[in-house]
Length: 264
Image (tube, rainbow, N blue to C red; front, side, top):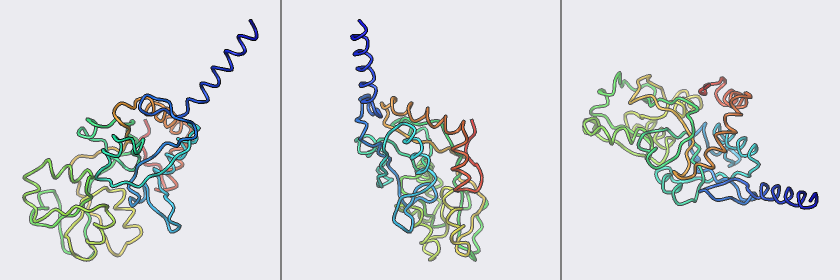
């Protein structure tokens, strides 16, 4: 009887070791990484540094979560405008890169709890006499934003606002939009406050932020395939542990000089 019991316990342990990180309701081999899809030109959330390595606030969070899960992690740069297709196809397991939680996205994605607030504000070139005190002041102007981003979704849902603008130009990422702003090709950029202020910290003489909020204040979350509750719950559990033991706060302090994450 003791031998049988010992064999049964060994089988249970073996099955547990093989469980690894689950996706799509199946068990994933422990050696197969969690694939994180991201826009790798979205500082400070995820971007390539001078060594061409992907770094950033969300990158550090995902690395720590994967480490606690006992899984490897792979970061895969994707076309952010096709992020839902990448997730649905299984080419990536999670989108973790300053992704706003919206009702429309919740129809096709399974989100984590929110971990950071985000605002869409206005950015203009330094020295330009452009006053935008409200979204009504966008009328008649050429506005740039990221394709597939929250501002694009907002503009597309407000036909009157979009029609009032001279033109809305969509870019693959905000860096390209800011470069066009510096070169005078557009009048303003509407985009994520976090990336905009980070860009300003690196180009203080080029860009200025106008504290005019466009749309509602949103929140960042990481997203999984709609039916992948197993992986979502595993990652959420270790992320909650990271918040509780102060790890998330320390990573935030590293990138933003203070903890700006949601505490609850």
